[in-house]
Length: 122
Length: 183
Image (cartoon, rainbow over all chains, first blue to last red; front, top):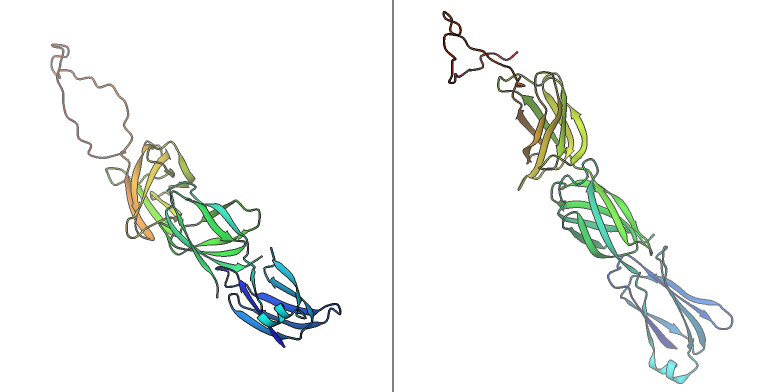
């Protein structure tokens, strides 16, 4: 057995989860599939054979997916327990935001702060 | 855990704000004049470059328009404007028969107040419009103010003559008149 380690980095996107699935090659048989919080390292014990590793996030609007082919029959892969770090950060937009009074546009220059909380990644 | 972002506005604009794509709920917790009010959700897409938010204040400004004889202005309108009076803000508000007019959804700030300017574009028959805006400092969520609008001045020609010898001399100089009762 060898341990496949996967760590998913999403920056500040702590409300997004990532999914790791491992399938055998060439049978395409699913041997592992689970969802995790970002910035955690998971360990998957695998037999010495070939696999397809798929890492994706659950951001519906702009999901990211990484596919890697693992050859655990090779001693170097088998022996070193490789760690795959997947940067699945959701794209960040640079915006200008303007706020105006609904009833009295431009009645005063509006100053101060608001806080925004992401409801969904859609 | 939800990620919360703080966005600061200067003169109604926040530039170069970096947000991940998604839909956001907004809390106007520190927006001067609009604290605690509600702003609709907005969505950032992969193509979004600008977001326009609208905020609705929750203050109420009651204004009574009276003249120097304590008589109400019984008709007309009031209007928010800039300090000069040449840029109106929002819709006019009608003055009722008792001289009262109410502005709703007015921004207010308990600490520093919000400087507003009110003019009176139209008036009743006995009072002129107020074209020079009057300053109002909106501090409370509900505030009552009185604006003075003197009785309309009529341009008239006065003649004065000697009661016994009319025309005996051309009378020169000045006299003073005091208003005893407004019509």
